[in-house]
Image (tube, rainbow, N blue to C red):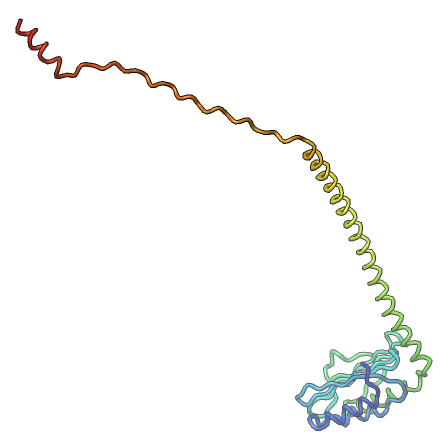
Length: 224
């Protein structure tokens, strides 16, 4: 919610063509004097919603239906604690904060919202606005500082891991260099040529008489 009342009036004028119920919200915006900030939204079907706050101490939410009736008025005076929250709603279960106080009738809700905005507008001066802005800026600064500190812690952890890996690499390089130097100092071993194998003489096989030469002898012996 960053729009000023003047910005909200201009936005209401632009939206008037599509939404015919913005006159109700414009009357509430007109009652906002001082450093109010807010936002306006429409759902495209004729309903509209107005959110406003004054230095974060007073907050207002008003919802208008497409029929031109207010369905919700939610005001919250944060400086009063839980007792500063009041809700007017067409839904009975959502109503809150009136107790013994007489609840305005639905036709009086616009007047109630206008009067509430007008009354609290005079309770916040420029000093209170600056204090509220300072508190918000301080919270953002704290968040950014925490993020930076967490990044620094993570960076230191990563640097430690990097140093460990660098030491490991240096140790392995030194070992490899030492092994290479030993290999360079050793003379190369020249393999002597092996003598050619001597072929062994083939065994001498005595010739045997052919089978046909032995046949006549066996025949002659048989005849005798």
